Image 1 (tube, helix red, strand yellow):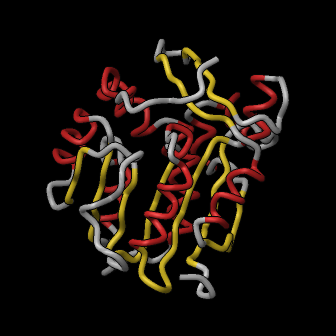
Image 2 (cartoon, rainbow, N blue to C red):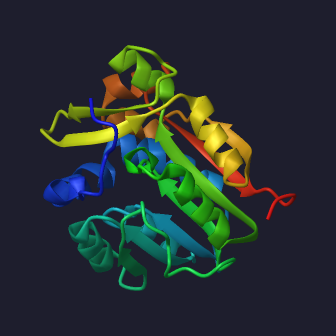
Image 3 (spheres, one colour):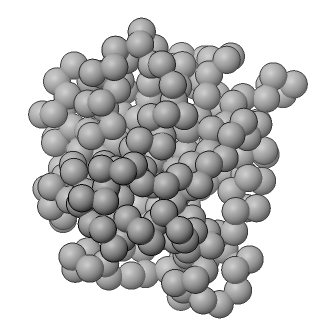
Length: 237
């Protein structure tokens, strides 16, 4: 068992396949994105940072809703795809274990961080950076694999934070952290955030036409994702 994920751009080798998979697939298009976009609310005229932006699927939706988008990803190929998809966006190749030096204090309204926190080793440092760049009244929307689902699939001690390695059904080899929900909430607290909402989303009805079996499972079991909206704690600077 390894104790770090590292900074290799794991998704770089299957970035184009991932775009095809996530554009209209059940887990991304009909489950994660609807939940996070709902938590973000009205983004018109607001500056949104898309952390681990991937091929720009969130960015495209946010721009269509009137936002100015700044994205980053550790994968150079993902950034190429995002720039092609969203020419008006500003995109950076960036290792999330490093400071967001290209963003000033109190410079953005919203941050969306979808299904990538688990790939970051310096989690507390990154959350502090996101707190730093958010304006007062801003918010972070974070989605992560449901810790219960991770535990049901991996077994062992639910409360043990550890790195696992898997090969997903499409042959994609990935390495990421699993942690109890308590750990994530404590990291948010220590970084100066208050959890405003925590939801366990269900897929939207259109997802039933994409994959009926998985749609039914995600509608009934805590084996998918959860999403958190966190706001800067005004009592802390």
